[in-house]
Image 1 (cartoon, rainbow, N blue to C red):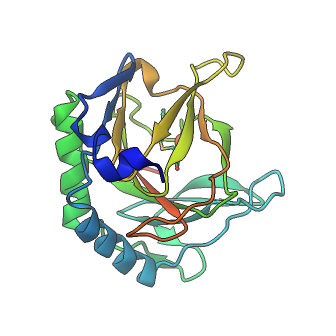
Image 2: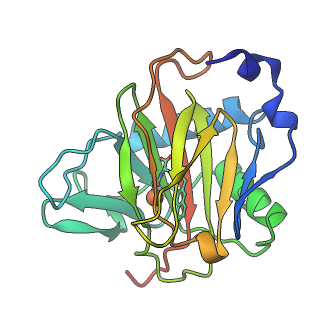
Length: 219
Ligand code: MD3
Ligand code: FE
């Protein structure tokens, strides 16, 4: 954590356009974070975080869970969206209203007033955890944006283009930041650098990232 997090300067900044269709809403969720965190914790009690296997045979350093009608899962045999949490074979917990409303308010502010996500992937990073460059393209309706909410320790987010060859730009995402990724940005390569060590007043030694998605119920 640095001095500026405590001074609340970033939250007062005007939205930063990251790329066509992508906008960073500084501190959009900061005041509501304690209630949002409580809702996330209740989801995680029902569907605990776990380290998934990748089809390439690795174990992900980021721990994951989901809420909503569909959740993202990965195993040695591939990745997909699923209506059930594989270990329990139970439906994912419902998306808490406060989380859905936050995602809809952010999407609306970014020019997507009809955002109706049916999936929310919850990522937990501890120091050292990272997410390699990838695209999210398994959702059926690519016209819908993805909304991301960052809580806890700051992260360096890498944002490229739809071509893997282009060198990504770096953005610092801090507690309470919300980003809406739509339009031409929707298929951009992106990732997260290894989380630096630190201690966050509300979350401790970790970062949570929630991504709200319109997957389409047909999967
Ligand atoms: C840009 N999560 O879960 S959030 C993911 O911080 C993921 O945990 C990262 O990438 C995290 O798939 C980044 C920001 C984000 C999410 C999805 C995007 C940016 C995106 C999809 C398309 C373009
Ligand atoms: Fe992603």
